[in-house]
Length: 155
View 1 (spheres, rainbow, N blue to C red):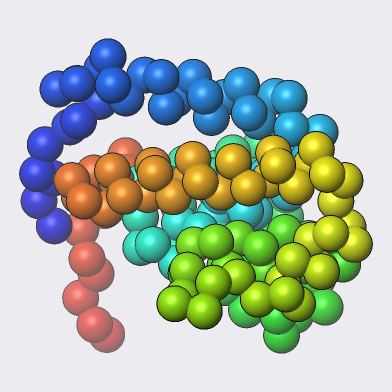
View 2 (view 1 turned 30 degrees about the horizontal axis):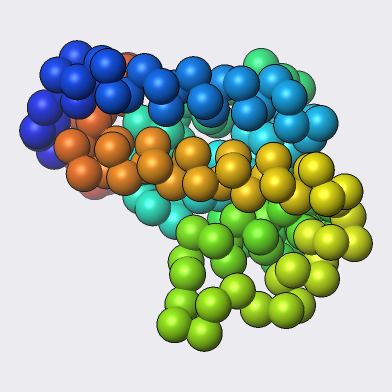
């Protein structure tokens, strides 16, 4: 995969405010850091954004998240490793990342409403919006993550 261009270098006056917003939203969200990272990883999985997956998997590990919970995140609905609060955040992440013509299901809102305060719901929603914006930048411009290794030959 060839990187198309780096929009962060081309238009820093437009991309830096998004970075600043995301950092401010994370600091003032009231949502625990490991859960923030799980949300960012899940949205990045759905959006096929390699650079964001790389970054947030590393950030999740730094925040104390286990490798197993990161590995299992794509199957969170089938795994007992996640709490009700985490499940609500992940369901909300999927609902807002995969908007459908029917909108967001009442069941998804009920889950997030049961586990998060009003302020946290706003913070979580803005966090999901921000990571989706970053995912579109990363996927659209094919930004590569550091440490890329050549593909291994099949054994």
